[in-house]
Image (cartoon, rainbow, N blue to C red; front, side):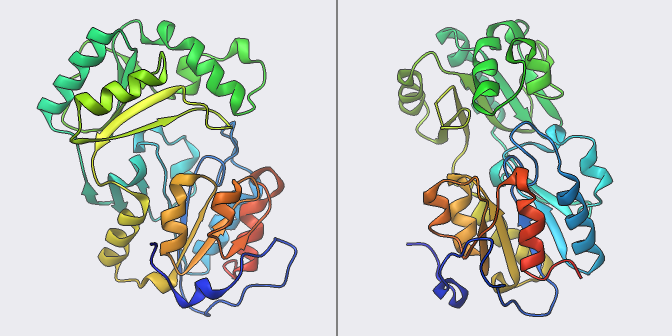
Length: 302
């Protein structure tokens, strides 16, 4: 059962309904990235950038909360002047330039998983704080899965999509045993690979992901017990803010915990019905200025 708050007695409302009443004080806004802050093709809408800047100018704190590592964040990340970030779906927390928490896989775990994936013939890459790393040959081997992912996300000219474009900053190297790895993602040849990974590494957390429609194209393994909701708790405790003063905005099933945990949970218009069902507010699609409209309705723009 998810934590309940008084604000959750509200019914989820569509973007064109009456404004949501919120306290007139400083808020902490936690914004999912892909499908929320940026489109599924990685475009940051001007309206979203402007909303973030105006909210911060009004005294609110804004943190992206994403499955991406810090190294995967694009150039505009620093230009927005955000207050920090939660990365790797909660494994990495940074605020005001300080690393608040970083849950990492142990060197032995990294070594063992790399060996297992190599023997099974599954292309993989490491998601680390310092960047994305894969063995030589990954970009060629993973290209079909990456293009299938891009197609599901609505990218144009799929045949021109490269692994380097889709996995920004990925480096092929033989130096793969690292101490800053949050998780390891790998190309699935079938769902049997995911089940085999769970059996081989029961001490790790396992997941799968793909394009729009959630077709399983990739599996991943990482530290057990990592969630966005748990990371929100740790961040708010660090900066001394109550859950009631936190706003969470997202579009995917992995965001449900934080939407239900925070004082106000907002679902994007492009979210699934499952996500919309736990939200206090449903805004418009990411490509229809949904984030900016949510900020406006919540009185965050000053």
